[in-house]
Image (cartoon, rainbow, N blue to C red; front, side, top):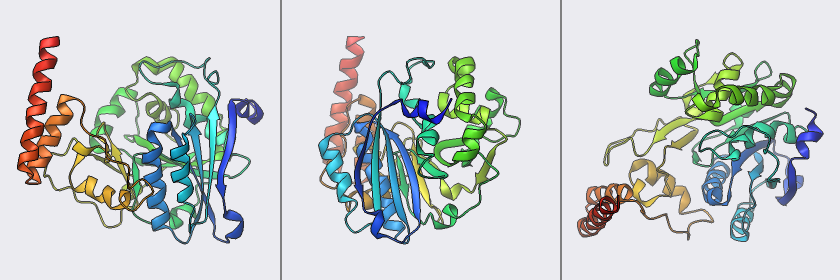
Length: 334
């Protein structure tokens, strides 16, 4: 399918800010696929990238549904004192109507599959990041890395994930990369019709896949990926770590990826990993936006346990009572 046909999937394109013209720094392109609910997470990611990469300029490409004016205003603040451009791309609602629907997953899973075509006129390679990531180091060395022989570069997922998913997906290499961080080589992606191959994989195997887009990427690209050290995508699940458990973050870590349902902007995700995130949160344009409070009884229980560990005993007891009441009410309503 020609690039122009993919470009027709866009409803509109909006350049929020662009001060790259006054900078002589090398430009790194980064894409996100989000809706407005994840604008805060993406914003903290971008803020952390800017904080740790003063010798680089960045063009941020935001794909998804429209952002509200508050989110746009805070994103504009990021450009103050930084070499930064931000462009938003909104897809037509009908853009993915003919593509297979996969269980409970929204059509947003297709966003990252079309970004290489849409960005092919502005760059030959770009990073795709999930909005639940935090940058702790420099991208300069990786940006300069030669990936010309590969469709993309990525980082292997955890050993637990590989042991479970490789046999299920028939991956004979024993590798299974996490798609929350991708370094995409646009010319190779397009020449090998990668988007079409992944869509075909989803059409054939979609209902069998636990993580549809990520699984399909691994199936289609098993032998086309340059595997990078885990410092470029250190996968951490806050909930898998018991309250109070020490979670060492290696000093050379470039990117932390907060996988799982609990995110670091959730109040019940307290702990070392969340505290590290909060160091950036509290300096960012989102510093006055409160963290999300618990809603479900499981979230309330986790929050109560975390508060107890922090020696906030009275507050912990209050949330334990809320947890018990919520759980009892839920059981009575079943």
